[in-house]
Length: 197
Image (tube, rainbow, N blue to C red; front, side):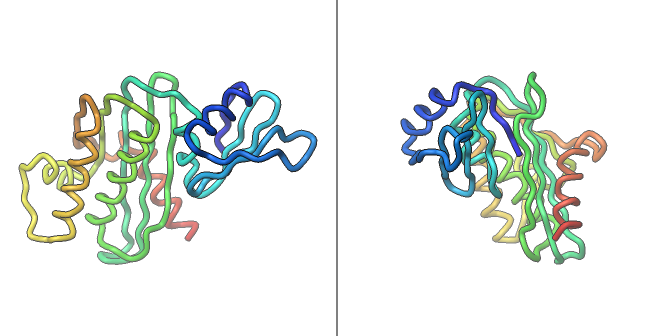
């Protein structure tokens, strides 16, 4: 569970200003509770604990991140098509800022890679980063996004357009193919999601 060390009253105000409904806590130790998207937050004396299937729905509103981040993504499919999952991690000078994984049903490996990239970019945007250096171990996806490779698959073309739209939200971005060992956190998250499905 992600924890944000902060002043709970300032955090409450941030969430209220963002249009999130905040209610009183359920116990004497809880200052307040809030829900937004697929995330729930509980505030204590000096921290806020965030839970749910997509904690970034609230974390992005509670943390003020700007500047530059490294974004790692990976998709995994057992069979092609087969059961698939995604993993992503966002890292800045403070360390891992956010990460996530989830199963995405049955699909191909290339579609899973695109879904991982899209979710990672959405999260980086939600966190408010201005610049992203994106890294993944799928050379095909990287080259398709850069326009070096084309695709005849309409679903992959749609995903490529979505990725380009998301990248344009940042002041500066780069997208690079890296070996799997450099992308190990995202790879591990995607495989753990499949293992736990």
